[in-house]
Image (tube, rainbow, N blue to C red; front, side, top):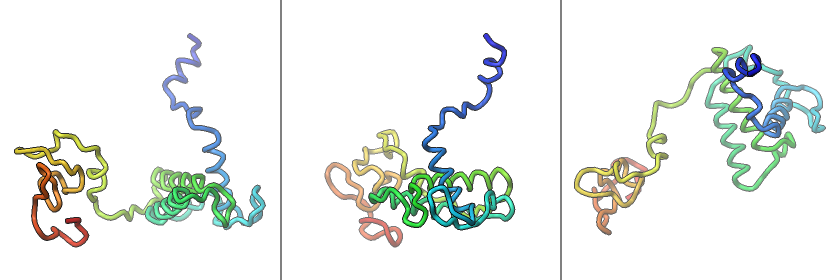
Length: 169
């Protein structure tokens, strides 16, 4: 084996990231960083390249922007009107800024306290069901403990009023 191959096998393989993905992200970064015309013929915002390394940034500002771009894409719009850059490139740029700011100590982590999203997004398994039966309504019953609107044996079981505002029942 070539000695360089052995050394390279211990490093992250950056060639696994699709070039198109990098290019779209770079176009979004160009739009945000340049004060003049971008390569897409659009006036840039002029924040300055790597500006988040000069001043701390709030995580939620970039997470919210990434979510707006993802939702615009999901709703059928490919390219942002202002930048003429693909929405997914903007979403990647937002995530890239958060990650870089985190690694350089310039991220203000203003996320809310830990919530239930991680648990709610996990696939339901019969192993998650409480003793006495398998919940048939998956994540809708809040922890599969026969809460509001939980279905067991074809019948709705659980409390008759919401546990908190916004719960489904």
